[in-house]
Image (cartoon, rainbow, N blue to C red):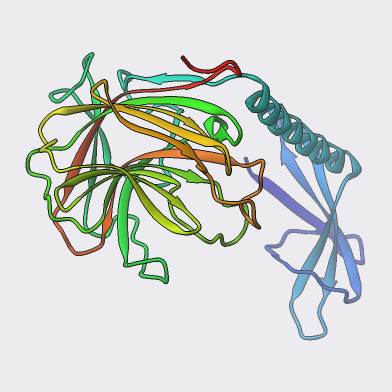
Length: 327
């Protein structure tokens, strides 16, 4: 839509001009109005304004909204606040039951691409766990690069991250199940390779510690499940079996709690983790007692100019357990 601007000078003569918008307090020398052209040439006045002459030369304007426009904008903001509040309330009241078999023609709304380079996640029709499609995630040199810091070496990543309305709530228990496949050509020498992780949402500019509270790692030929707290990283499971070239069916039952949490996990239906204790960082600035946890899967590695690596993902499911338990 085009904006048509005219103004009247101090003698009442109509003029047209291109203006730069600035905030000034110099002497007013005229007024002009701005219209939005509507259907059949009908014009709606959107703004009223004054034209000013600067002592330093040049013309500029100050715009003031009409009351009806102010009301419309305020009503729009109020509606957005109500929608956002309703989403928050629904997230707190309605139990989550999410399933994605990646059979649609594009990535579903359940995932955000904030941690993905364009094209890093592709629908896969040859290597699938079930159905006709899976997702292939490929990390390239420099993808989502993060420079070295006090917390570790420089990194790069491509990860599917669950969308914020689906974040888990602390104090509740959730069941996650998903299938991953590590290709045979995936190197076994990586110092850092995280293929799935749960992170506590940082609600401040910076949080410390800044690590996943739970993670699945494939590092130096070892498949590991680790837990992180303020004292460091703890290994809940470790195996040197060759897990490449086959689908790995994971199932996690996790209660997110800073004191009385729990993790029970199976791999291909065999129990691998049975842990009780903290599964969150202790409440502190940025990590409130009533917080959120989000899930990611993909490839998160050290930035060492390695060639592309690929991970396959299929059959993702997440269910919130009733208070009586998941079993």
